[in-house]
View 1 (cartoon, helix red, strand yellow):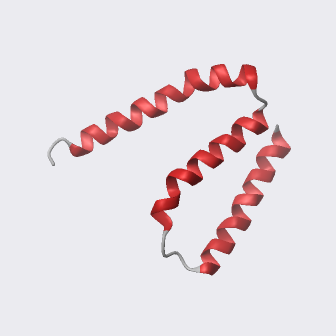
View 2: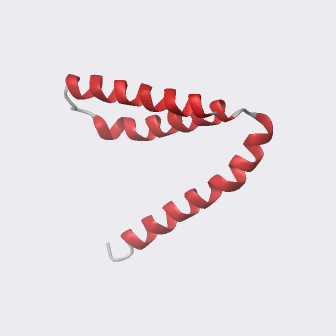
Length: 77
């Protein structure tokens, strides 16, 4: 338990640091909208198990806000 939080911080740092070379390669192959879509899908897959039991109205509001956020990112691209 003593090393749990430092290990988690190290894991987050490694994953976060790896996004830079991955995005550098991805920008040569995909458009900005495609990369953003993939990032949202990966985040949704990671968050899926954590949101069980969330009430339906919260889901509806979250989907509306997520769609607005995606639309704003697409409009900027």
